[in-house]
Image 1 (cartoon, rainbow, N blue to C red):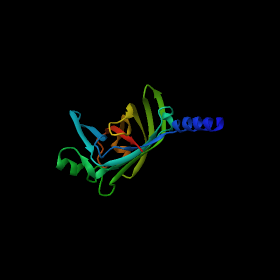
Image 2 (cartoon, rainbow, N blue to C red):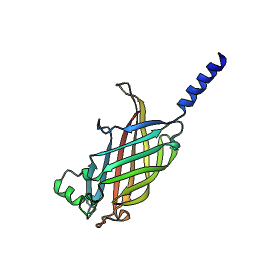
Image 3 (tube, one colour):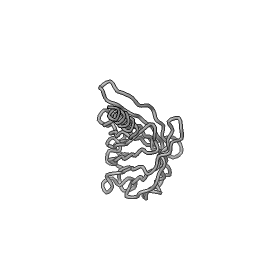
Image 4 (cartoon, rainbow, N blue to C red):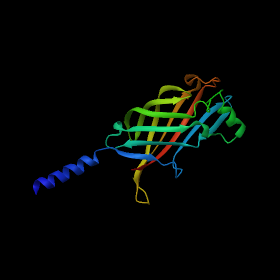
Amino acid sequence: MKYFGLALVLSISMASSFAADYVIDTKGAHASINFRVSHLGYSWLLGRFNTFDGKFSYDAAKPEESVIMVNIDTTSLDSNHAERDKHLMSDDFLHADKFPKATFKSTQVTDKGDGKLMVTGDFTLHGVTKSIVIEAQKVGEGEDPWGGYRAGFSGTTKINMGDFGFKKNYGDVWLDLHVEGVRQ
């Protein structure tokens, strides 16, 4: 009986030390991928990608073992201006008919303390893959009102259009990410 009790305690403690798998909650609109780019140095052009999905694994005790994967439908770009969206999706920029998908897959997560993370990964956009770093912040985690469990993060990174082979290069694009995942 002692052996069974010890085995049960060990299996429970081991199970709690493993990362949980989450699916990004896009159905409930609890996640967003936004972008901003300087417009002639006078203001910000803002937009977002309406369609994306992804998943991540996360253990608060070992955030450095996290793995994140995100798929973005570049044809879902929305800057709240239809004519501009057509131009941004043209071969001058995203060339969305040829490259309808962008992806991110983490390669390293560094725990900076106080919920701050540096997420390094391979970002593929416009047919080009580059390593990028996302400065992330854990927003929170816990049980939701529907009997599930959620974890949320926000993050920011900057990419340069020229690094991804855009025909027109107007410099840096900031990506602002807000992700809420539902534990599976």
